[in-house]
Length: 377
Image (cartoon, rainbow, N blue to C red; front, side, top):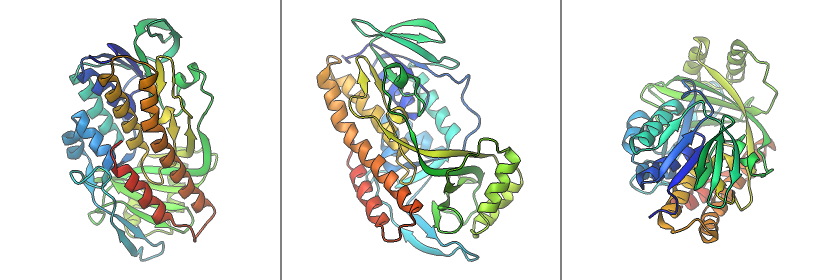
């Protein structure tokens, strides 16, 4: 029998729902609590590496993900300027192994719908408009409070509630995401037929310009700039900024600009970084995913690492007889070094861009991390 019979999960991102799916499949009663009133209808794209796809297969959703996303091999590098010349076609390490594509992309809300549907299919209860607001440790577990009211005692509370995790605050962990000096504009746009895979442009007025296909007719485009306070920018102004900053990039960017002019939705966030030192748990409460670690998407491993957190945690919970120190030691031994390697490499790649360091071995660092990720967590 699993070490837990009843588990509460805070959040509804990939780490939260993967945890709910794996535990519910094992016969555990799982309640997911999400503060948002419903699944968001807005969003941009998400890049998924092979090791994320391997987890989706374990969850039983890989067929749906493959059908609704867009998956491919390799990465193109283009030069800024009028010709947007492809200067390199790079192979990618198949971090999920030979049975999965090297990577791909999909529309975030589509992924969320797939995961919620799967969680409910296997027996988890997903509650929207339900914010975890408090907890009390008990002799046998943890009492959980949602919207200010007790919802009962659980064997475990998993805080997978994102960068600004309430659960992290409730258990007294003070480590929080810190800006890395970069900000990113994202827009969900149509995919030109001549974009078969992710493409990146280095140089020009921003640090990185690029796009990733998310479907037969869709992709998300992004511009990485020096982090700025963009909080007062209107939707119209955001579009104008993306138009202006992208003028140095041609090729498929010409079509992207037409979509922007036609009203494509634009959003802006800062890159952050943090890594909570072990332990990630306090008693019968544990944080995973973005609550425990974050990094710039310079090697696109954020979602994969969150999914791996969930897979390893649930594997241990299902196999163990008790939630004890041996279980937590095994969890941290498998997750902390791997997450730390991704965070450190992602931050280093971003810092090299900020410093305009042309001597840095970015390909070597990326390849080295990819080789590590190819080994199952």
